Length: 74
Image 1 (cartoon, one colour):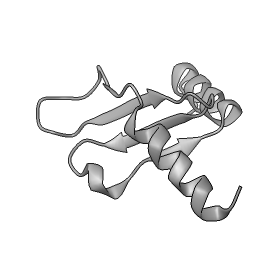
Image 2 (cartoon, rainbow, N blue to C red):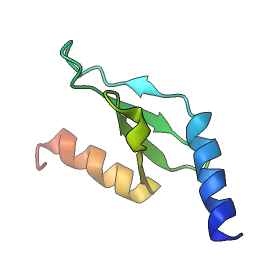
Image 3 (cartoon, rainbow, N blue to C red):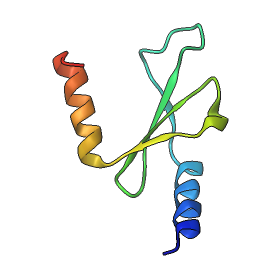
């Protein structure tokens, strides 16, 4: 797969992702959205400016992040 086709595949995956707004987001537009991707990765984006794109994490990195948030180490 070429770099361009990999990029297009990633964009397609993001376009069809089931985005959900964080339940911790307030009403003042300080919101993030999360989406599990078909590839098993996870994406996060800012709802104020979706044109900035998304941060995409491998499954192990996402799990480490979630664990750190849950145990208070982050």
